[in-house]
Length: 188
Image: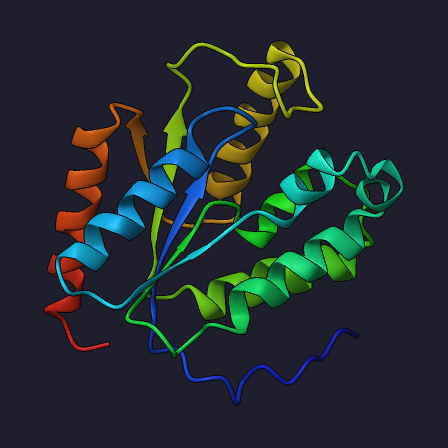
């Protein structure tokens, strides 16, 4: 039913996708990783979370339309594909499935589309180990913990490979940068 022509997009970029609920440190680590990779001479681009813009704008109307949020996040990611060696994504678009009700066909499309575009990805699930900060959040700490569990279960159920790491800030960033460098040595 959903057939968007994305096959013409070359899938040459390595994705680093950060998964986790609100306030696990995805944005902080994604920005730091992008900087570290850039300092190493690797062409890297940070793709920010569209929904966070809407939270800061207090645009509850837009946030209520999760199909729009998810589609916009997908667009933000795919427009950069192939233009950089590495795309660092702090909110992979399939995480939108955690926040809204979707027709089964559309949810299936999103999962399959994500798998096709992320065949060469490093998917990182961040274990919650930093103090919860309510600033800029629409969820409570308990709701965020529940979202963590739902995200991890989705990755497992959909057989999306991932590594699970504790957010140890610079150690985590440097470890992931090493994984990216190792992956770049392989033909894409």
